[in-house]
Image (tube, rainbow, N blue to C red; front, top):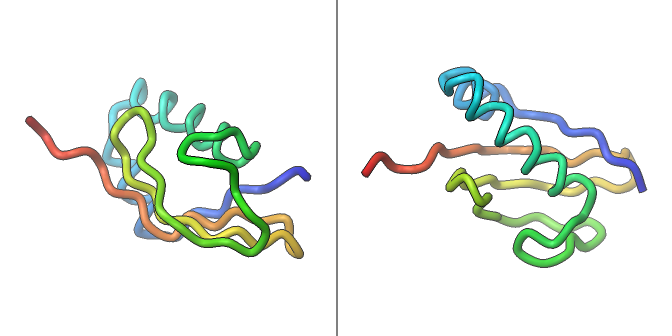
Amino acid sequence: MALRLQLAPRALRTLCGCSSSMRVRVQYELGALAAGLPLDGPLGRGSAGLVVLDSGFRVRYRLEPDHGLLRLTHVQAPQAR
């Protein structure tokens, strides 16, 4: 199933505050999430959850297969060390 990503305004603002190279990296990781590749296990139908991407970003999502959407409800940047 092909999915479209939909970002909540707050998630979009978080990503806009990142460097372009980091946005590209996160874009690839979000693409893998949307494709259902196992980042933290496969996505189930009608599921919601939290994944931590390899880049360290924490992403809360809600899968809506009837609408073909993967809604990213919250994106949190990794903590600076």
